[in-house]
Every structure is written in structure tokens, then in C-alpha cells.
Image (cartoon, rainbow, N blue to C red; front, side, top):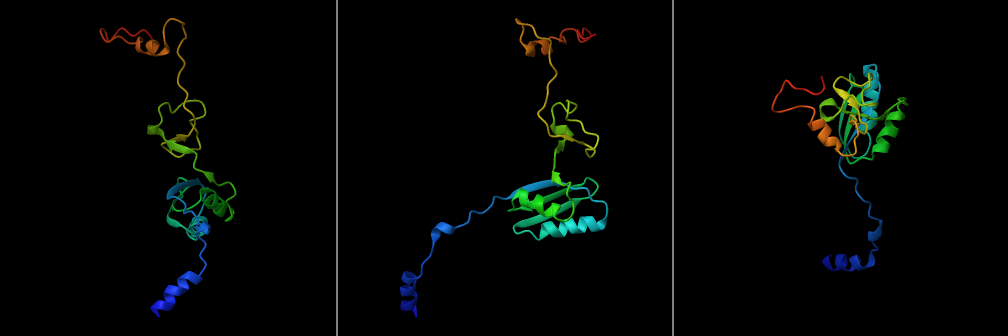
Length: 154
């Protein structure tokens, strides 16, 4: 049989150009409003049945679903929307302690879970502009290291 197997390798046609590229391992976070155990179970079962999913975490109090695995984020979102959760969207928040200026316009959101703010481009407070002094020096010169009670803001 060894000779037949050897010869059959020459006769079989293998197409190496049809190899599919494997998706990278990633974590997808989605905001989904879930009111009851049934909603949570439907979302969990729908996402778990996707090919390539490794773990699924559902946090009903934060309205958040975290999916890890070799998945396409858009397919995960589409599958969640197919359960009737049409208002589902990608998680728009970041933790508040990771943001330099959390109360910038558009960053603070009352609907965000506790300890989170919107993920927006951070705005910095504008310093009074003068042509001869750079903006960094304006912030540094507000306080004096020599006399800590001599604050130029007051």
C-alpha cells in the first residue's frame, strides 16, 4: 500500500491558493440593554453559537456583553441585533481613571455606568494666548514653588 499512497499523491489535485486566513484573537465589547434573565440567555446563546467564540461574559447591570475569540466584531453585533436587540452598539465608554480630562465636552454621559465616560477625543483647557509665551509656560507659571501661598489664580 505504501507505493499506491506515494503514487496517489501525484494524482490528487490540491489547491493551495484557497486557504482561508484565520481571524486574529480579539475581544469585542457591545452595549446591549437587557431587562430580564430571558434577554440575557437569548443574547448569550446567540453569541456562543458563533464560530470562533471562546468566552462570553454578560454584565446585565452595566448593559455590556464581552466576547473573546477569533470572531469578526460586525458579525457579533449583527447576531446580537438578530435576537431583537436592535439598539445594540459597540461599547462607547472607557474607564474614568484612564482619561486625562474626563469632564471635557461630550465625554461625560449621565447614561454611562458608574466609573465610565464616553470615549472621545480629549479636549484640554485653553490657556490665554500670547505670542511671546508658549502655552506650556502659562500653566507652569500659575504656581510658585518658592511661595506656595502665592497663587496667581486667586
